[in-house]
Amino acid sequence: MSQKPEDFFKNIISHSKEYGYIFQSSEIYDGLSAVYDYGQNGAELKKNIREYWWRAMVQMHENIVGIDAAIFMHPTTWKASGHVDAFNDPLIDNKDSKKRYRADVLIEEHVAKIEDKIEKEVEKAKKRFENFDEAMFRSTNARVVEYQNKINDINNRFKNAMNDGNLAEVKQIIVDCEIVDPVSGSRNWTDVRQFNLMFSTAMGSVDGEGSTIYLRPETAQGIFVNYLNVQKTGRMKIPFGIAQTGKAFRNEIVARQFIFRMREFEQMEMQFFCKPGTEKEWYEYWKDARLKWHHSLGLGKENYKFHDHVKLAFYANAASDIEFQFPFGFKELEGIHSRTDYDLKQHEQFSGKKLQYFDPEEGASYVPYVVETSVGLDRLFLSILSAAFKEEKLQDGETRVVLSLPPALAPIKAAVFPLVKKDGLPELAEKIINQLKFDHIVTYDEKDAVGRRYRRQDAIGTPYCITVDHQSLEDGTVTVRHRDTMQQDRIKIEALNDFLNERVSMKSLLKQL
Ligand code: GAP
Image (cartoon, rainbow, N blue to C red; front, side, top):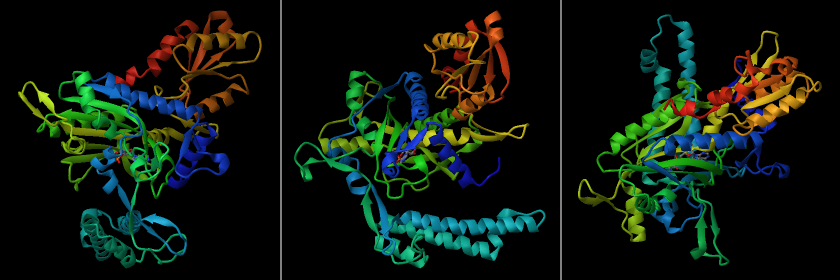
């Protein structure tokens, strides 16, 4: 159904609330910005996504093991990792509205507006000229060239300013671009300052410098500091990986787009330790493996693309994002980074402990290189939800809202309905629930006409609805209605477990990897 992307996104947000997927945190107190709670269906979907990731990483790879490190870590961890000194966003306040913005986001949005103007020129020309050559038009049309030069100039100035830590120049770009505060409409800006994104608190009863402790801004450091523990106790041989899922916290200045950018979120990260010199091979391997994992969800290959980083962090020798087409455009979903031996060496230096690996084949010790895969669970949840959410016009003119979730991830695998609330049909439906519940989460519903019950389950994303009718009492069969095709089959009650196992188990997803 064609509608504006922002309306489509609003519908997804209200649908998630209406059907118990996601609620604003502490809603009865008017909510807490950029913090969300998962409801009864959301918690199941999130758990299933996490489990699919874990199985694909840990269960399917003999050389990957999983850990669960604490959120609190020794504060020196964050000195060593560079987060205390460099995990910053440049921020700027508008003196009239008192609103705070990320300076880089203001500049990015300004550039996006100029890009829109270029697109409009291109669209206009497309309509005007037959045999339209877009590349030629972009390089010769005076207005488009002028816009493009402007963009290049802003981007270059910004990149250089950030590289040099020149915050005065960042402000000057905002002034020169005549960027106005969307709230007050004024250009009355403060200077740009760096703002550290880590949340801090105090440990124990003493407050002050020495007791400051951080909520981890990424799970990766819990893996690095345990690398030797796991290698030794698991007798792991290089190459091997350590996987972990868990909460991370960032005091995002501009937190928006629902669960895309949150202040409390969950990451699923894997650090793959390999011999120096082999990291590029493993980087390519993990890029491929992770894209395949996303494709296996069946949400459309066209929704994913790589964005290889041209400018790399000083410690990385390759980096790429898997981007997903969210309702608000292609955005980062997962990062795959070749981080060299930077993190382990930093921890060696700050802790004074050796974090080396003795390679029996080489007869020598070295600090391993690391390839990291890092995906946000909530962001992944949003990608799945937005690709699965459909508003379909049916032949009878009605609209049905359906969440075409991958069956293996759906919160409820089947709903069981008695056709009517009498004649022993509810009792038989309960018996079927008791037969299925050892394998799957199933639900019972006897309220309203069957058609309405189907619609309710479609909106939740339940892949199968099982209806018990009078024929069931005679021949022990039921109808099974498929969520996506709405087709119905007649199936023996004793065959239901096998039917569901085959269609909703994670095995079918894992086999595609
Ligand atoms: N250890 C590497 C690391 O943390 P990152 O690019 O900062 O890298 C990795 O984060 C992933 O975590 C992102 O690709 C995104 O999916 C997710 N993520 C990061 N910040 C987030 C936020 N504020 N809210 C939700 N997800 C976030």
